[in-house]
Length: 414
Ligand code: BGC
Image (cartoon, rainbow, N blue to C red; front, top):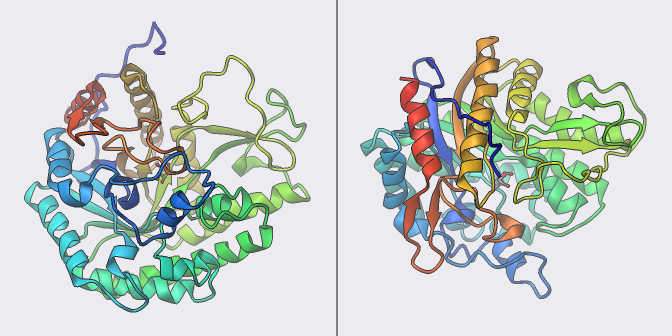
């Protein structure tokens, strides 16, 4: 429910030339019919913990023009979407020219509508052939990723405006090897998590080199989950808290987790053209790095995350100071059935972003997650992150009031 006294900001104020105002999506969450990847298999495994299969998703593989029209109608100048590796390289070393052609058409569609294309090369899904070799825990992961990036950029690079190599690699490892709720479904394997982190860091470097060697000249970075974490060494929610960048030296699992989830990725981003910041909420952790139970009465989202729009401002400041490179907010958003809550969230998150920019943080863009209500991984279709609905029967799209609100804020900055 929206706070009764809340009045959303009406204007963002001026932004630098070329500032990207966009929305973000990912292939598996909207395209539909991605049968040849590890997620599809995980969704359909007997006893799967995934709420429901992705199925036809939003059918964006066919309806991408409608998606781009929605973006154009909001007056946005940017769209972040991902390439589905399993479509482009359906078997090892075999590349599908028709799939690349479809992505080329989408990129041309962006150009026609004066929408800058921000392309992500890996957003959580892996081709089955690669999953069967060990996925991100396969020692050849980096060279295989670089080869795929090289082929894709060879065909598409002249139409790309911004590139993200990997999406939230720390989450890939955490969900796949520590919590086990995502493919490959392994829980508590810190050694595998560490190997996966090393492989993903190497893949980022090798992938970025491959992108730089191809046609086009565009900024390249990582899209990182920048957790707005409060660590509580005494293990209580209200006890003494330290944010991730001010954590005192501690022995044991907390530091291991901090190093892997945060330091490794900040370090990896340092040589990049920008760092993509993805922040949704605030996380409270105890001395062993475990999430603390959330007290009664704390305002929550449909994802069972705290409703903390201001987390974005803290994450952006942290990412900028820790990496020293410009920031693009590559994802930020809210899952709710109540669109007034979404307006409030966007307003408060953007006010926090504005304050960071006014304090000198070099922010080059903001992408709301997500364009459409879509397939929210293990949660299925229940959480509603979209600025537009996507009817599960007809797949018709319709903008929500928050889309009008966001469009107005964007217009106010020009
Ligand atoms: C991911 C998206 C996801 C969103 C909301 C991010 O972690 O990149 O794929 O839908 O958060 O959970």
